[in-house]
Length: 311
Image (cartoon, rainbow, N blue to C red):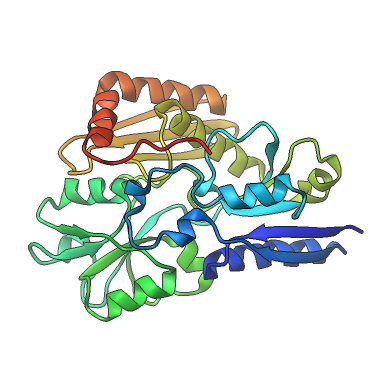
């Protein structure tokens, strides 16, 4: 069997994800080593992600390690991977998906509607902010950075009445104690790829791709490919107010897409069904742009949120 080197961020969640993949590979007889790599997103902790303005902020340094042959594969939260990879890389596997929903976490309140007038909610995601403001325009949205434990500690310390996190990360870490509401996707559309892991390798590395083939989930690949095609059509990264959620039943994909103004004053949603993931994602993206999504995104960038650049 092979000796495989995995590149990973050093956060608690990233390490859980990498150890999970390591365990599955070791069960197949492979020898696995883990290299922890600090990324741009890990180094910048005092600025809202939407204002950093760098696509690949959680992947660039890991891809450099791949390119330099210091690691053989990288385990990413798929939502962190830019929709357009450099030609020298490929996604060898997309794992079966955890719950894609966002969740409402609070010490004292049962859900979004139970928050008092003007309550402080923590999130650094423009996508989450926009959808929160659409249903509760009175809420105060304050930035929230740090790993999962840090965010939960800030909530418990009373800095926020509630915070919004991804269900997948909390489920993986077993830290669901403060989850009060799983937010329906009709109220808060997730980020493209949320809940799935993407395993990246050097393009053309057939042996490593073969070792990882058993991890690739056909349904997760179809749905997340569709979501990422929508995101790509809209020209957005994971920090802009764009949501995408697809489901697949018997080869038919249902895609729900969203573009929103950060203030929640305008929310565009579009749902369509198709069989070709890339075509469907592009079609829904085109419809959202034609309905005013282009103007929303231009305004977002014009208000000081940096236009993300490809790495």
